[in-house]
Amino acid sequence: MKNDRFVVDQQETDEEYVFHLTGELELSVAPQFRSALESIVGQTEKPLIFNLKDLTYIDSTGIGIIISVLKLRDELNAPFIVREIPDSIKRLFDLTGISKFLHDEL
Image 1 (cartoon, rainbow, N blue to C red):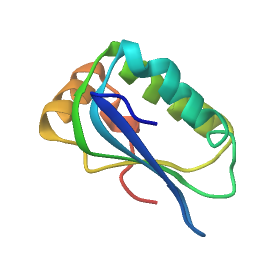
Image 2 (image 1 turned 45 degrees about the vertical axis):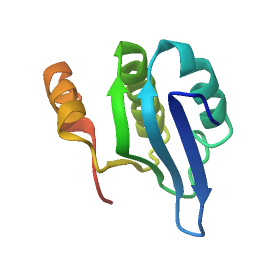
Image 3 (image 1 turned 90 degrees about the vertical axis):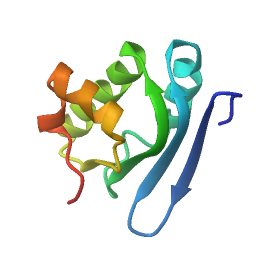
Image 4 (image 1 turned 60 degrees about the vertical axis):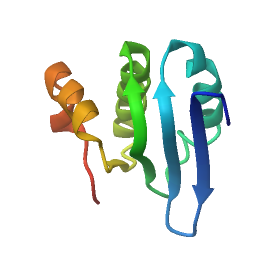
């Protein structure tokens, strides 16, 4: 999925599903991002990984998507990992209290 300000590069390996997020995850791109996740989020045979290395901005809608994925994957007892969180976004995660629920490795 690609937008002028937001890109999702989805990769699947034998071991994992990886979503590399680039740019700004905010309200206007949320429907497209949810759509990209739809077919993968419920599959439990491999860990789902978000790599946020190139994410420059996230709003409450984007945080809400991450929380909903976190909850669903927890209910399914399926690994969900968030890697390479930029410092500015990590601060937001800390302020909202979700940092303690996000794992960066299995």
